[in-house]
Image (cartoon, rainbow, N blue to C red; front, top):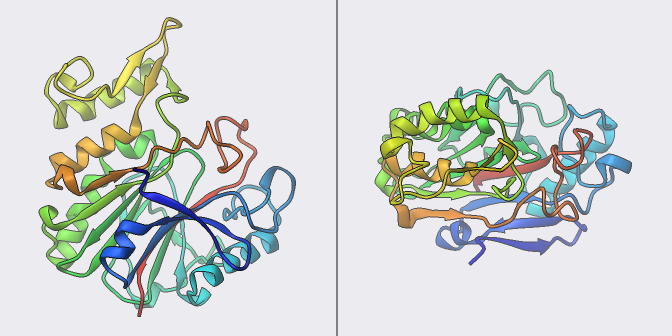
Amino acid sequence: MEPFVIRQAENGCELLMLERFMNACPAVTAGFTTRRGGVSREAFGSLNCGLHVEDAPADVVANRKLLAESLELPFESCTYAEQVHGKEIQVVGRGQRGAGNDSREKALQGKDGFVTNEPGVYLHALFADCVPLYFYDPVRKAVGLAHAGWKGTALQIAKATLETMSAAYGTKPRDVKAAIGPSIGACCYEVDDAVIARMDKALDKIAPKGGADDSDWPPFYEKKPNGKYKLNLQQINRQIMIKAGIMPSHIEISGLCTSCRTDLFFSHRKEGGKTGRMAAWIGLRE
């Protein structure tokens, strides 16, 4: 069953709610935006949440405010970052609350993963094909969010996020509930030998024989007749989570492909690079 359930807010925003997280703990809010229900125009129509994509900044801020309003969150508590496709994790306290919500210059700089145990701090990350990773520790009352493109996946950002939660809050991976959100699927994600070489190095650390050719493991990638590869970033991130100690039964995976569903999502690859960004969010309500 698809873990991200589409809902339309009263203000028109169409959102995908991570309802199992939220039903398990009413304090948690988590989900993913669609491209529908905002004010941006043309290639960025309409709920673009990215300030870095040549959209009108005022429209992007208006969209971010619409998102906060639809979730009944104070906009001044919504926190954003400048992402760099790395694996650096930011521990976010109340002092960083609201960073970057209306300005790239004020955003958390050079980070692709974020964790907090502070109620009233709402973490946001931006996507247009890359994989959103969600973490919730119901024992230590902490949450995390990570942005995993192929580079972040190869760097095992999921593991880095868990390690940061463990160091900061005493999180035990076996307690963590995780989710892997909508992203480009293996159906649409074609990569070359250079990317696969990087993936093989990561897979050597998390699965026998690199995983790709072992019948006991999921098909992390598949070679195509044209010499390129279909890459399954979702399954690789799932395996990294399992290797890091998260129970397989605690991991939810979306079946929605951002490239297949450009009616619903922005897709950097499908739309030739000129498009908007969805926002993933997670936080603990006050």
